Length: 398
View 1 (tube, rainbow, N blue to C red):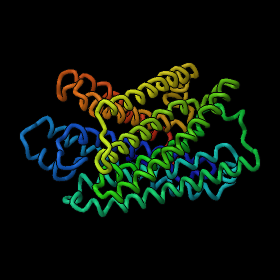
View 2 (view 1 turned 45 degrees about the vertical axis):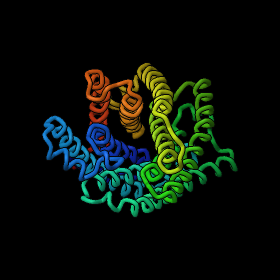
View 3 (view 1 turned 90 degrees about the vertical axis):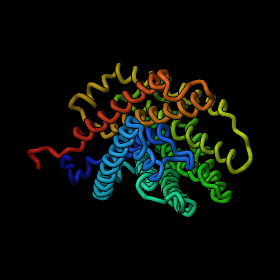
View 4 (view 1 turned 120 degrees about the horizontal axis):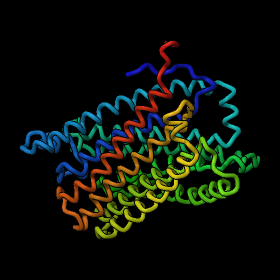
């Protein structure tokens, strides 16, 4: 691994936390193979025991897939932890600078929401590691769900504190520059609340204890509904400013932030429906899940095409990905790729296979997986490329 830049000071941005977020998202992409393509009938997610059974079986292709996925999870977990530690250290230096005080008095204060967003991803990564690499963990998982609820509760409180501080300031002073709101960067707060909401929904869906499931259900719905209300507001304000002033070139990537917001919100809603089904007697038909996922995929495709067309016309990729211009906000390119890939897996397996419209392991099944694998490879390449461009310490300085 290359040596990271140090002591950025005034040139640091909280958006650098998105580099760690992207690495955590990469872990989730490899977990999807294990989640949907390996058998684990006794548990809702793959575990050490279910993977051990696969590796001791006679399906060579599935064993190769499992080994590759596990290696990917390990590598990108290490990268996630490294980038998280780097960001925490650099943020501490940044918080002592004049640039930090200036950020706290501008529209850009919302960038601080990238911090709880990333830590929520860290909790998810920790849960994946525990399930896959700790033998017998699922036997005591009911004792761990309350700890997960507490962890997401602390993260949610942190996110709410940042957002309330920001919104109360602009509502009292009116110092919100609408002319410079010609992008969807303010949606970062919605993304953070959605990530906390999907974290709570895991305990709601997977716990067999009605109290634990109910607490997770209520808290998840609180954060998802808050995210929904704020999304409606920020979306209207952002598009109004963009239609009047044109989108800001450097922030045009924010058009794609809708894609991860849709994914975390959609998975949360699906998990909450499973909680109602398993623990509270409400029957959910597979076609209902297909309908929900189809609506969400459609919205993602709309913003994927629109965002790409806008960024292409602005020359964003030529400048900030392949060119010499540097922007911490370009790390926001990683999340949509991860999110589209993850919701695509849910759509194929929960939606199409779950309703019987698609036969698992058929030719059509693997044909539909191909674009998702291509998207994963492109996303991982983009993440590593941006890390090398924006985080690598120059050889002369080293």
